[in-house]
Image 1 (cartoon, helix red, strand yellow):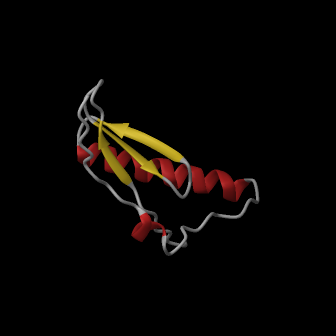
Image 2 (spheres, one colour; image 1 turned 90 degrees about the vertical axis):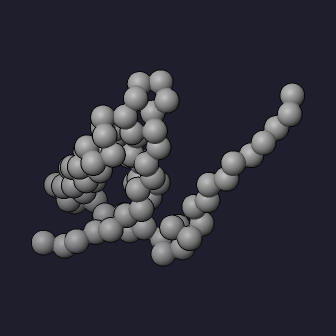
Image 3 (cartoon, one colour; image 1 turned 30 degrees about the vertical axis):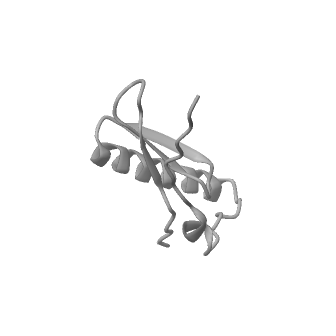
Length: 80
């Protein structure tokens, strides 16, 4: 069994509540009512995605080493 590690972005879901979790390197997302649930759901989504690729004989995408360092968040103020 191989272990894969990916950067996951967690964002509050303003409209529905809970959290959205996304994996930029894989282009997948999931959600949960709590941060812990969102974490569990995205782990299951990643595992399912990788298992599907393996069944199809497709390569498993690896996260570029510099991806985590490139992710940024900022607060930007505007006056209108």
